[in-house]
Image (cartoon, rainbow, N blue to C red; front, side, top):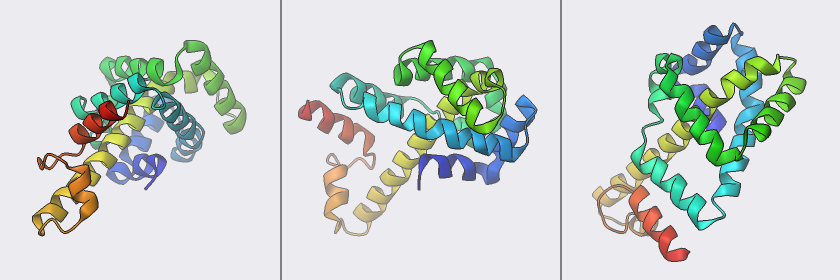
Length: 180
């Protein structure tokens, strides 16, 4: 499942509805914005993980932060800390406010929605992208744990959960450190 699908499907679409009500948009408009922003943010994450520091930062954020709470409880998207966290994420992913503005401008030209609204929405979308990544990491971790409980017959599960604690995040981080 892609990051976008995870976000759109979370809570039966509740995060999309929440963003719509928060910014005065219809669900299809929010979906159009997400279809523009999520792939761009995902590309930024991929670009960052090409460096040892970027990969370590991402793995650390996935292990220690609970960004998935914004997908599980979209009401949290109204809080200032959601915007603050999102701005921090954008700083890591995109590097500068100019890039964020350019991304909002491109999304605006594709969707016809005011770039000012998209700029305000962008930090919240960034938290949702991280939440989606964390959910996917947890799902993979659950798959690893399930395979281990069924007799450990899955070599991929054993490889990913090298220390056998049921969590692959710490093991991926350790592998990344060794790699770099």
